[in-house]
Image 1 (tube, each protein chain N blue to C red):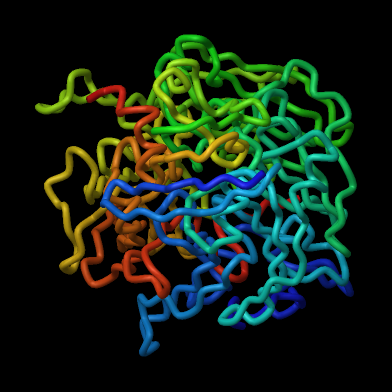
Image 2 (tube, rainbow over the protein chains, first blue to last red):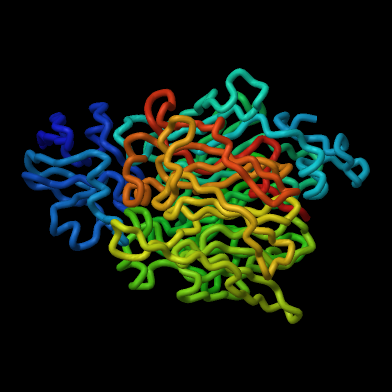
Length: 105
Length: 467
């Protein structure tokens, strides 16, 4: 069953995409021509990191690029994530930068 | 002859092996003195991890000062997919095959660090390269390898790529061998990887049948960014590995511990007689020299230490982060970058065990006074280096790796990085920033991009090895 996923960027932009059954969020954004960053496409590199704001989103492969603290804080890897309900997700290149701050600063 | 031409006949520059034609130059000195000035630069250019919805590309930069488009990005070869993270790249063949008839240095092997996709680019016209073939990630994963990094050719018409992870982005990595004729995958290069788990860069000295490889971390560890907890947990490298180049077996591990955390680029002298070299330990910010002793065992010592610096706005002393180094073709000068501090250094290494600092250029970074060149803000700091064959021009780019850039120089993710240059005076042991030369990848067609490794048509200090 398809779900509507609403994507929010930190600059205030917002777009909704339909994500089909057994489709990842990145599959859907690429199909819709919405530029959400991604890299490895198997849940390792974390380039596609988003933050789940609302809804039920499941990882269909282990999100190796996230540490337990990231998952507790709602970060998700959109290349291996499928919605199980309508969702609202914060996206954009800067979300990945939340994961690891400058350790010397 | 212009080295911008695909290079087949070495007779034109005094090849001594009668009747045999091969790519490259018979000696490092021949390459240094008989090639012409570089006119074109290939630059790995990437948009992964940016809000620019486009693919990475091979950037073609005009470095011919007599050209109207000097210091401009004159062509961009877009990759067919997004998300690759182009990083390091190499040639199908180099001077190590100087005796091999029929080989031509005309194809670039361009891996995607994140995607594990490998692009074969026909660069026989250096001003207009085209993608000839793409090896898809699935073909690479079939060999339980991922995250392609360093590309070197092997004299017998093969190409070997260091691979940092297995098909799940975990350890161990290994080496992937391609066939140089049709660019198909042969399989693993190594026969026995012994105690090697992590991989990064490698260099080989075929006359002595030896190869040395270094260590970053597992892709799942370094891809998302740099976390000190991972260093404390032992997830980052501190060793280099000695391999038998002929039998492809692991022979020795040199473990540096705290002195050599995250050993990245490995450089050995171009002189094929030498059995020593240097590795830059990025996090420890030490240059470590390694050498073979009389009984065939390899030894090491730290020969340059970069002191951490206090930053007024930061909590902890900041390491230099030595991310790249190279040796001039005459093996007289070692150059390396301190990406967190913001300087590039030039050392006299004519006494290999006692390097002598001769000059330093500051440009960007967290400690440099100079934060702009030619009206362009310097985003990032000296990082990937490339030296002209004659040793008189040092070029560099300022981006390290998309997720690491985001931590240390976040502006690059929005505005892209730069390519800069210093004029080098080897006879005087000094260098000077060329304020007239700046290629701002923030102005790239289609939107800002990061710039990474640089190579010239015809070969360079970090591509060519001699047999």
